[in-house]
Amino acid sequence: MRRLRKNEPMRSLLRETALRVEDLVYPLFVIEGKRIREPVASLPGIHRLSPDMILPEIDEVVSLGIQAVLLFGIPAAKDPLGTGGYRADGVVQQAIQAIKRHCPGLVVITDVCLCEYTSHGHCGVVRDKEVLNDPTLELLAKIAVSHARAGADVVAPSDMMDGRIKAIRSGLDEAGFETTPIMSYAAKFSSAFYGPFREAAQSAPAFGDRRSYQMDPANRREALREVLLDIEEGADIVMVKPALAYLDILREVRDRCLHPLAAYNVSGEYAMVKAAAQQGWIDGRQVMMEILLAIKRAGADLIITYFAKEAAHLLRQG
Ligand code: PBG
Image 1 (spheres, rainbow, N blue to C red):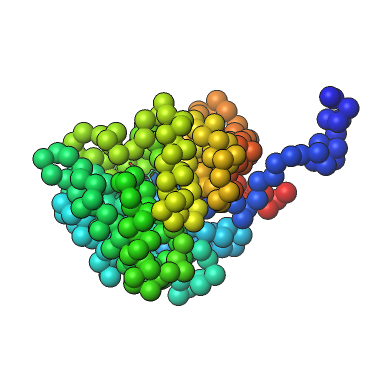
Image 2: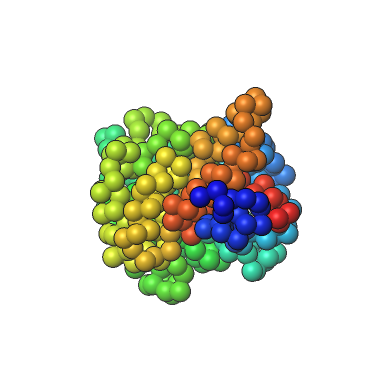
């Protein structure tokens, strides 16, 4: 086998998987207010930005050749029904408009969920400490439509309610957004790897956990059922999340369906690499590239990652 590993030209000739800048999606946290650029302690290099502060970041992203961003909103006020999620002048809606005005060619994807907007921090309507499924669907569709109306190119529901893709598809179609695609967080596991995100987005649940709606990490077949159901309901792109501890799921989905597949290299995966690199225990850049390549090799077409800018830098240097 070593004949073919002799030198770098030979190795690159035979390399089976390539990571491209175009594969990367950069997540952004938009916080309501003005002139805010707050670092997120557990995600070194990542900031919460107010809509007026987002454009320099967008310029940087675009100059690196990154094609898409994924927006998360952090509203000034929260309520039990998360009404801030579908206000026409909500924080994400403002950001979408500013970005699309500034840079119409950048693909703007928006996270559609209630947890950042609800006072209890759950991804749905709560009654007697229970997260209700069907009453949540209507609100999710409203959020998706308001994002599309503000100019979002793709909406990405991350709540894990049953039937939400169908509800969002109908909502979009009825409102005249039949050309807006849905990227579904189809197999989203209930994961401790989301810890730093919840700090960044101020969206930790006030009571209980998300195990009654997000998936059990032990379940592989169920992940496939989730993906196939979302496809049936009209998802255009399906996602597996987290990525690193779920590469088998990515592979399985890749082998079983033909839809574009996204992987979310989540906050905890990023934080672990950053923390170990800061200690000098690993080479952070090399580990980053190895992880992103592994996600690609497992079958992902798109990778949503806090590493997008750093990886793009390295990929452009060649
Ligand atoms: C919202 C949402 C979460 C993430 C993306 N969308 C958090 C959660 O479900 O608690 C996590 C992303 C990350 O950890 O980077 N539902």
